[in-house]
Image (cartoon, rainbow, N blue to C red; front, side, top):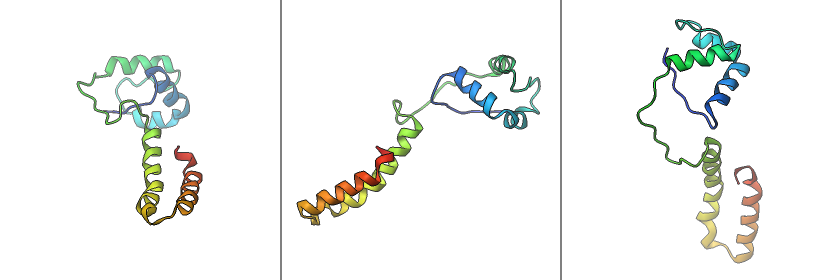
Length: 111
């Protein structure tokens, strides 16, 4: 079984999260792998992973300081900002202020 992923946190927390929250899913995914000790207790599972892991030789992140949540929020914000940018030149100051305030209200979750 080959498994590759990344996580916004440390390795210990990553394995703990998978083991405790997706216990049956981990068994379904890893269960046919030679020597799989089950997801819980987590100690033997972590040892199993350490014994079988392969270090990556390269990893690229377009935004190394950003989490996936931050990237998704930025993309959502861009979608909400696009109509304002497109129409700004045709608006008088009061219309722009109202449109800007509406955009900010609509985009709160993305800010």
